[in-house]
Image 1 (cartoon, rainbow, N blue to C red):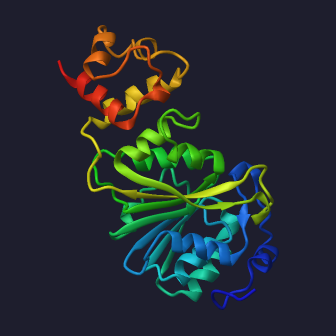
Image 2 (image 1 turned 180 degrees about the horizontal axis):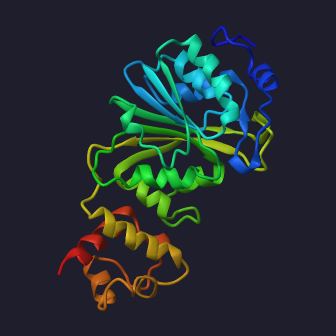
Length: 280
């Protein structure tokens, strides 16, 4: 297989540094550099952007991002065993890769990045959804990132792009589709990874819109969506009753049916309800 750079194949890197994947860290290494380059290309033109990568592991995607022309890459890695392998990549791309050892949930990447910023990552399974929700719910919009190109379990990816009325439609779909354009750009079978996970994976590309599709208070919308989908089998008048004493009238005023369930409500419908509940 042709190399995308002058560095050794990833299997040799893993063997040289004793990097067996650890389940506790949600690690599944993607070793095919052709695939990591495809993921990097799915993020669009990287030449004028800084890239945040979370959980680089032995650096397969990191190498893809740098080879595809990323201006700079900030790689946040929790596993200290991976740092020597990442240091070898940094040496091969002088001044373009910064590696931080630590927990991505606790690190402020903005101190290390210059806009425009793209986030590209094969996210560790155990923190992927939490990171996504954080990136989708900042205090201000547009966010610090232009786009997210992220690998998840296929089931999670399908929840992000799901349409109303489908079983996969839920909180992630509403949060992603309210202020961004989300689509699945690549699907990967378990055997693409070492060790193979029990499920397929998919890469989702999420491009931030300049402003939300529909006006709504972000905090209130999140509360409504969380309440609705936490009891998704219940009608809205039951699942949302804790939000207002006259919730049934408010739901009707928003143009919705109190007997509907959350999975039947479009993003626009949830936003209309958020505006209604924001009124005195």
